[in-house]
Amino acid sequence: MTEFLQHLVNGLSLGSVYALIALGYTMVYGVLQLINFAHAEIFMLGAFAGYYAASWLPAFSREPRFLVILSLAMAVCAFLGVVIERFAYRPLRDSPRLNALITAMGVSMLIQAIGQLPFFMGPSPRFFPELIPNVTLASIGGVALGSLQAVTLAAALVLMVGLHRLVFHTRLGTAMRAVSFDGKTAALMGIDTNRVIALTFMVGSALAAAAGILVGLSYPRIEPTMGVLLGLKAFVAAVLGGIGNIRGAMVGGMTIGLVETMAVGYGSSSYRDAVSFGILILVLVFKPSGIFGRAVTEKV
Image 1 (spheres, rainbow, N blue to C red):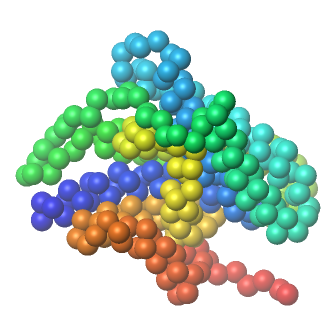
Image 2: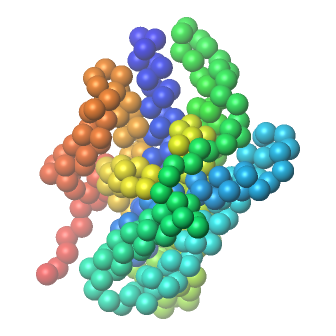
Image 3: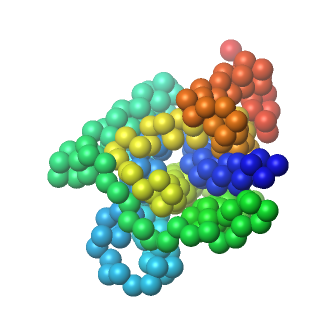
């Protein structure tokens, strides 16, 4: 039982990271019906933004430094998300969806290639600085809660609650949901769809940056291709929860994190990736709309 509870804590910590990244996928899909494959690279850029910010900022007390670096990384990636939307996706808004999908893949590979240039990040891994000491905060019945796990869970919870309130309890959130439901009708009702879509990219990219910082804290080895596998798993989480559904992305991320951790704990680490993508296959076969998604009939 103790081992199970420890795996539960570890799985929730990992799942919260997947959930933060999955939210960006699901928000963009909700308003544009687009899978933004470049979102995984925004996550990677968030980790590197935190790395460089930590290198440049003076060494003051740990907690404020972590919050400052987290805020800076989120701001940088929010800006980059808006830039990508404005120059890569907006010109293709009225084009076939396949064009935008290919563009998203191209942007993803472009960012990876730029990141591996020597004058930028380079192909060699970097090691994320220790912003928060890794100590055991509590140990109850043999189940340990580390400081990094606590920070990850707390930060993810605050950000997800904040996003939920933004989407379901503000005028901007109402506009987002209106554009998601029917963009053309929303525009006729006076909603600035370009502004809403840009803000959606901004919020989703900021959440991905936060996930990048949290991953850097727990797994200090960062590199330009770090977003590929984590981004795919977060996409699996978004599909599992129901792509386009905010609550579904949260639940899907937590579920993938828990299942993956349990598979490693009670099986083998070699099954980690197979389990995640096996879940994707099962979802696509038996419930393509996901846990919280609803099947939609389209006229052809």
